[in-house]
Length: 438
View 1 (cartoon, rainbow, N blue to C red):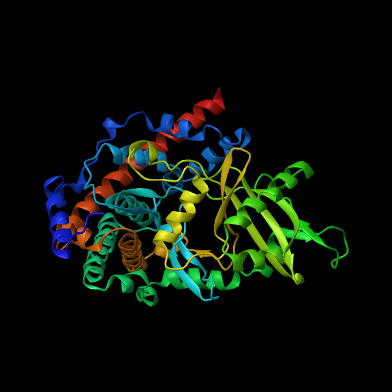
View 2: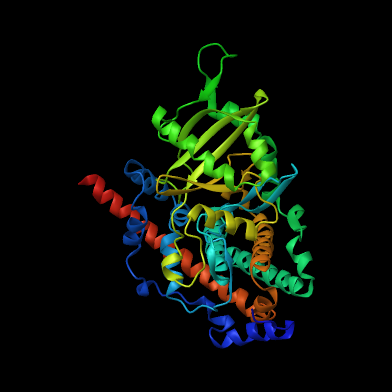
């Protein structure tokens, strides 16, 4: 291990400006893509449930932002051909405005944080910021903002990120690890997500996803089918899913193992989730603890390699992609789901977590008016905390300096990438129309 002083770490960050200047982050080179966008998407579909691939494309065709949500493999390829700082932290990998949300902390309090880590990997810190910048512009356009307003939101996000990173660089490292974001009260979209999360109790999920097995309301419950979004599975598949709890239980801390042992599985279903994850195998287990009024829902979600993995050959990542996602989540989040873990079913790897336990996300309509910039600042601060926890705030802060030129460049990039996303979305829509006519 090589020991370095704080001054050396800061100077290392400053030296990375020679590799790529802060004002040079506005660049975008779509013609340098290793393959066309639709081909990159088709490659990412390999191994998914064939009957759900069409559904994924239908969901992506709903709007440019919906396309963006499902097109992380395209953006990963686009970022790979742009010069990077080489300053590494843990990446969320899919940092966009709807991948932050509210959920219950282990102590029962509601918190708001980054909450999607399917694409997490160690890589250049600015890749998360560029994806967030593009999402803010797309979300702003969807919520009725003019381009200047959307760009100002990006600048607010990046300026807040830079200011918070400098604050982290001055703090004792142990305080960085437990830093609480205090700006939540300034953003109405966060309030809306917290209110949703407050209502999203296990009993509420029980009513939404299950029904009595007979006409008797007091009868035992099972999952309510709503094809293709929620489907009950065969007895054989149920047995395979429940068997995956054995290796999952073994990786939990002893106190979590004990708690899980007091719950009894009742039913299993296949669930379609998200946009980027459509087509991957996702199972829900309904368990009961102290009777029918004590439900627990576990999600067993297939994880494949991060979309960024082909472009980051030196990234240290576990062979088990469920573990990769769990480790990345723990690296970036202040508090994580107490049931977070991983398992396998045959050769496929899975992340395990609670389903809908006091979870709530924002809607694009929540970002109208001044809410966009206020929310953008929360996004910037949360990303700064995640990167500072998993990277080096002195190095990142040394690179950013005041952050003004970097923020303007990211606003330019966000607008340019939003334009490119709209073009790619239009290509997808045209291709689907041709296929439907054929």
